Figure (cartoon, rainbow, N blue to C red):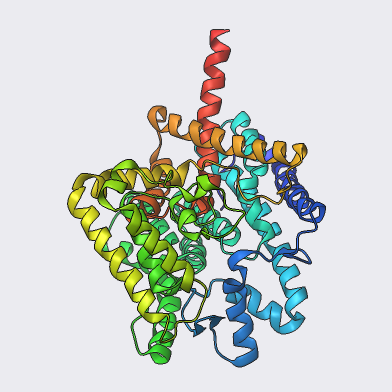
Length: 486
């Protein structure tokens, strides 16, 4: 048995599937044309080979070529830099097709999986809300989200993680309805795969276990049945994670259950500087103009840098009272000397000085501003995480009016969905499944922003289709009320 559909969706399910897939294909083509329009140098076939794409497809290629899974960068070989989520797909593609064709095939696979996920999201919405207009709203508003589809044109983790999470939720609902352990296995399979694509996705197991417990109670709860169900849903994760831990211990001689991306990202001095910035809830994204990290990365003798950019306008006034401007300039100047260079006997003392000063002022800020450090700063990061102040890094980068309007439209779409979702949290009366999905969404948001102090907005991508689905419910409620008033 599958998820029970409403009469409307039973009659039109083929139409919805073709439309969902077709819209995603059109979105890919539209964003791809933006790259062609500007002759983007990072365009390699169908793949937008930008930023850290190599850390996801490089290790599987290295495994095929050298027999070992590793990422190679300026630090040398990193054997556990990323979890091997792309390996089951890209590894065979690369082995049989080579690099160029494998990247193209992976992009096509992502488009197909995103289209299937978009269709399954409509099925989930149909099950939860039983409303034709909501189904159509989900189809359209999720379909035209460039915030999500932007990552379909890249071989990074966002697209596949998003699709696998929706697959897991779909099979979870099937289990909830049918008490089928086969559905539960596939739920755990895709949840585990989402974890290996992006480890924070392990939070999906929280609502999964709650649903398993509740479902087991409906069918005559016993500890044996619950344990059996928990093992079925987690067997893929347990086997894969055990193999990953064993492999890492054998290679590295240490316990690495997830990966070392946080530990090995950037230099120790950069990590200390980012920790200082986030102590007051600053923006640690170096590419975001007018943010604190951007200020540290601006070269003081670059003529392209304006005097305003060299000022301390991006720092809150109370920070400048705790950290003297001279000290900030000293940290910045030293960092620009060593940034991007391999540390030698001459540069290592400079790096150590940066780390020492950053750690000192982080501790001083924590001591002088206890409430701000522990509470206000986290709320500030949460705000940065949810509400970016500039248009997304879409493919239409050019300064012409059409490109600006395209970026503005997609930014408006993002804010519209997010604000409707927040309004819905106040008025929504969720059922059991909806409550658990909302628990997953909110937990992930809080983990990234409040706990880990990460302000990068792209980490919200993996749950944005779910946010869109709930926003469509709230929007339908508002439209219904306005219709009644008329």
